[in-house]
Image (cartoon, rainbow, N blue to C red; front, side, top):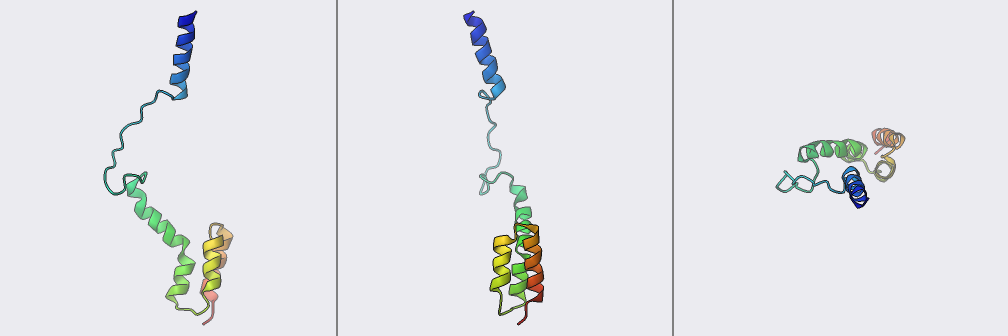
Length: 94
């Protein structure tokens, strides 16, 4: 009876993943904490795309930039907020 209980506990531990040994981290270097170092350029591209309305307003050297920048930073995570900021960035007057 005790052997049956022990085998059930061992089987439960194996199935739950409690005995899983994680492989060593093969990424050594400055990005060892970053999950996939090869994804860093894609992350930068995504950030640039997210901030595109802000980049447009700053590049066009407009005087009234606070509105589009705030909409882009605060509501840009929604697609509607990003499109509104992009339209506002393109239509803002000097």
